[in-house]
Image (cartoon, one colour):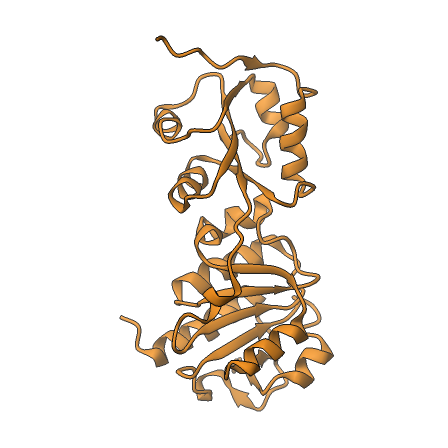
Length: 264
């Protein structure tokens, strides 16, 4: 049997396009919007369930290779519809609608000495995605995203994480104080980064099970979180610099943990 060529969608008011746009805007909470060859490839490798795929009318050779791995319905779009649906400045040529990852709480504590990241009201998708990528590269067990943070799986955050969000367990919209209580009940130390701490980040023993909390870009961690944590640490900075971007600060601290833990 000769395969049937997908019907070309030429109207942005098509119901499939409207649904994909709702996913892109975060209004379909069980689904995520994945755009571009690299991210789609990472999504396929992660094994997430796919609901739909959209391609340009003339997919590139690299996109054709990806399409051979895709079993969900594929819809071809006119150039104007693809541009209207995409979340990037220039069309990437391929988009998939995938199931949102649903990690279990136990996956955070599988390691004998877990290193976990807690993000308290991180607003910028670029910062959040960079921290996800950094956390995975530093061997973190997972990320708790406290209520008020940006969506861990928004298109912009996914682009910044470069696929790490498909692999690293992330639990969104959780209670920060609830996370601290859960970690403490499992023997995990709770540490918050703040410029007002006395202890330097390299003087803390990162070899022990630890939850590291990074706070909002402008305000830092909430007062409740500050009071509830076991320890506060700061990164020493040359004057007159008073603070670092939260993604840069997270990288410095996480890779001090890598150094102490002897990752090779």
